Image (cartoon, rainbow, N blue to C red; front, top):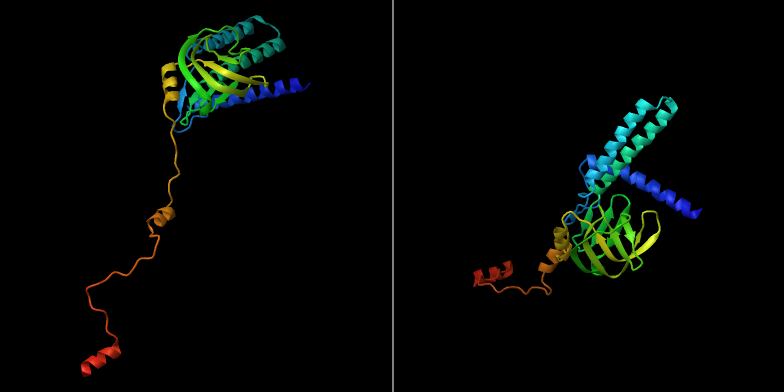
Length: 243
């Protein structure tokens, strides 16, 4: 029962993130890409396939509307087909607005739409290289040796080796560990170059008070000698005039 509840919650979360991604897609915004980060798109091999499925679903809806004579059955089929089209477009929108991210600090965020979000800190990345592979099976495939394939169109183009396993949440809610991550990027050379660049170190801007404190002398200043005569007190001036 606990497993079913976990799966139901994950599926509901995927649905909500997909609808949110539709809004981001229409607004031409991206999720989780900060200043100095490099976004790596991965939708190239699957875009035409997703829209082909959506088009076929629309054709099926129109055909069933002409063939099925029962209004109740027609309404149910119309709802299912319309929901399928929305989900396909939402998946495409999620993949566009949630790209892979090479962080300015050298970290890597591997994603697939609203279904997967795997974060790899910079110190755990041992090596990264361009390597094209063609794994079979699901989009997210986890091997017994800890190798995680996140393929798009049954292909991966970048391989990331880790110094130690990294925990992440699988699409249906279970926890898994990755030792090697293989992912697809439309521009694998650009992603590898971004991960190999030195991380950007951000320093806190000094405040005005700190600058003034640094300029202030550590010891009290001694009075400077002057060539000008010292001021004469009024009493002494009277004595001088009388003499």
